[in-house]
Length: 279
Image 1 (tube, rainbow, N blue to C red):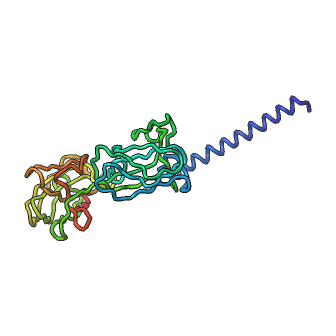
Image 2 (cartoon, rainbow, N blue to C red; image 1 turned 120 degrees about the horizontal axis):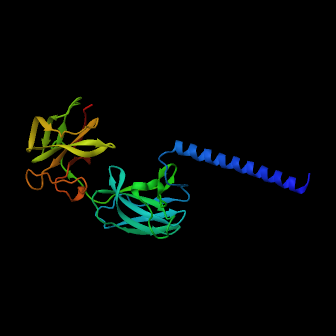
Image 3 (cartoon, one colour; image 1 turned 45 degrees about the vertical axis):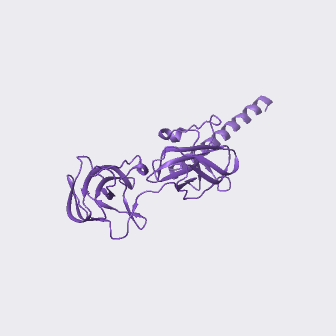
């Protein structure tokens, strides 16, 4: 066998081996994606990526991150907490690779009582946050994931709701399969003039409002709330809100909860609200 023949054989073997390796990698990546469809960021370990901060920072204008550890240059990203999911971005701060302590992130345009703080990689244009919530999986500056969970924490930054003693505020209603035009509220107790507010259920939390009824202070029973002519979710969420603003005008904006006057009542730290099945 001459040198040319040996060289051709070696190249052929190398190509076959390379193809096998690539095929194996491709198969493994696909399997991981199928197993972990929610892991769409950069996977790392707890030894390389960490986030430490107080979970109650009520009233602050700058969120304080006690300690962050990042495997590369990164971003601390603060989002409004939209029923446990990130909403509008309200804070952003760049940090260097490794450990950073006492990092202060200015907050802007807060609308929710809690925020979600995450750590994102800085992978594209340096010192420019290249991330689009509408195309998150294609964005280069995606968040880090540790143990199949995004490296993120929820932090309370504003008070929300109107506390009231037990027994002074409640709503009662039974399941109403087939309800479309109206929803019956069996009993409601309000410490002052209030609102019964009916929402669609979205991702386990309140979605669009589909019903509203003003009620007097004290106990009322056998109330009927007119529902908007829209497709209803399997469950409707019914909450009791105070009427603190203009009388008989519902002053509450789901997109600006903390600055709305007619906030919901809370008893022992829990919102006065119930879930009513309608399907």
